Image (cartoon, rainbow, N blue to C red; front, side):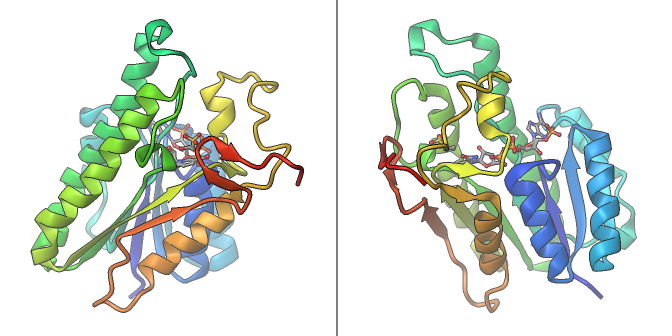
Length: 254
Ligand code: NDP
Ligand code: 8X3
């Protein structure tokens, strides 16, 4: 029987590329996001292309009620879940703290921290029971260092970094692997356009250097998942060659 990976935020960017990578390697997939049509079209494409089963679940990860309802609807032939990729997340706004928008703060904390916790809380009991499973969190360089105007997004990703370590401490005795990938800037995603509320001019942050892209990250996520079962890659910090830290980017052209 094929292994099953559940990937949150698979309607775009890193989650979508990761879902495709797992499908290419024979995994059946449960993919989630809020945009039903995008998820359904993508599910159809990969089902045909890779001859794997794909279940798409539409819900807002910020609502525990919605997460619980969606996960409860998963039939027994879609269990157990071998790999959970906690990817759904976003940055909203880019303001100094005294001008921050409260609604944006709540969106980031509810999505990046509480959403990851809801998924983890609901999926891990079956992993603990089986003494098997792998959780891979998509963290960020913003969870390792802070940068001006990054305040709440950075705090939310520092929380992800802390949770990756804390969840591993709790679950390693049940033979569950807990890993994270912490990228710098990643293109082929909607990240910048979401952060800058659709302002395409402001979202042009990748034009004068070559960052890593969503496919690069998907390869790393799959590499982590495909190690022998006694190997757990705990943390991968990854950036484009021209990026050394959040704000040290050699913008000398692509
Ligand atoms: P995208 O905007 O391309 O993708 C984000 C995904 O998250 C979408 O599928 C979106 O689906 C989903 N999502 C967002 N909010 C919710 C919600 N409330 N409920 C359910 N799903 C949600 O961005 P990326 O691919 O770049 O982001 C993926 C992860 O990578 C995030 O955690 C981000 O913080 C992290 N990251 C990104 C970097 C970058 O530079 N791009 C760098 C480092 C980390 P939908 O809109 O359909 O709900
Ligand atoms: C996304 C990378 O540097 O924009 O997490 O915070 S950054």
